[in-house]
Amino acid sequence: MADAAASVVSFIAASLRRERARAGLSLTELARRAGIAKSTLSQLEGGTGNPSVETIWALGVALGVPFARLVDPPRRGVQVIRAGEGPALHAERSDYEATMLASCPPGARRDIYRVCAQPGPPRSSQPHMPGTMEHLVLSTGRVLAGPAGEAVELLPGDYVLYPGDVPHIFDALEPDTTGVIVMEHIWERD
Image 1 (cartoon, rainbow, N blue to C red):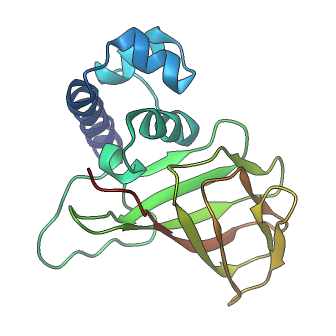
Image 2 (cartoon, rainbow, N blue to C red):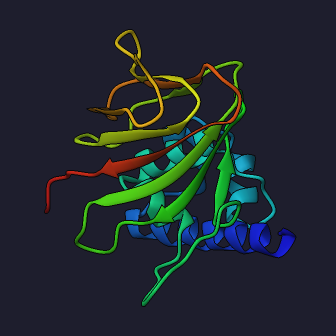
């Protein structure tokens, strides 16, 4: 498990350096745009930080790239991710974990996550890249999910589609609430 976590951190470090160079941004400028400390970004790029979901999302938005491009290496062929495996990141202020199941390959526009959350402070997400839509299918438990102020309660088997480019929440109402989120990224091509 420690090797898998170290591998994810190493991939994130390389991805951040690559995408920051591609965007032509200094450490200082990217940290400013993402609203994080320059020292935090430096640690992440050096592979010594402990990135949270919120930090990686903020960096992805600041870089104009999907979250998956920063956390999930491309794969070929058959891929199986067993329950409890895969690159997982945790929220800073809520008991929420997102595990990347399938990232968006070049030219495609979707990422798939398995999420697990516990009652407590809700997972509050800042807007993702413009045009992002989120599909959620609840597997277990009960949740209040969707745009802040318009979230809906879901039971197992329920589905909701909502814009991910506005502030939104995932508020577990029962222990071990799980679901699958498919994120669609629609962006303008240069």
